[in-house]
Image 1 (cartoon, rainbow, N blue to C red):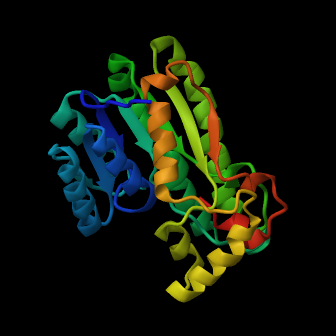
Image 2: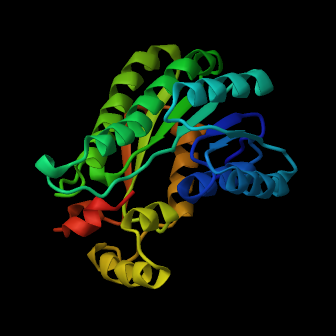
Length: 268
């Protein structure tokens, strides 16, 4: 199956590492003109440089905090000013949180997670929807199986991802008559720094944790960033031209298992 994005402008948020980095690199290999957004400038510049090596197309790198209105507005404004159009929006930027039970949860954690994982996606999509309507483009929201699998210790993050899933369904219905598709990709256990940073452990401890955690994956392997990137590209392509309002779970069957709280809390 061939994919060609050589005439497409693709915006990937959270592109400086993990799933966002893998997604940016795959789109670059397929010839896309990229707008890449991240908070870590050094990492973002490094990813942009690797993307440029694929087809010689230089990405636009935007250093911005999508937890702020200023960062979101900067992202939308600079992307459209540079490319004059947008074909694909990948809302990948997110933060996770390890939390205790309800009455012990710090409300700052709740606010931080919802500000980036939900409000940031809402506002950026709102600002860029007119450009996507013009190109009959599409949106992919990167969620998590934590939005549907319930576990103690995953309250704000799981709620935020559930909200994102419903946002996808609602916006897909609004934009379908205008020719814009909106879908969700929900990773399961995925080997990225996102997960490692939430657990706050050493490299050795993280490896040991992964060895235990992956035994809960029915297909035997955790995801890597490229697994999620390939699904994002497929949904963004013309091969999925009538797919909208859908949540595609890429998790090796993990969501069906009887999981420990630790595992479910920290998957993305």
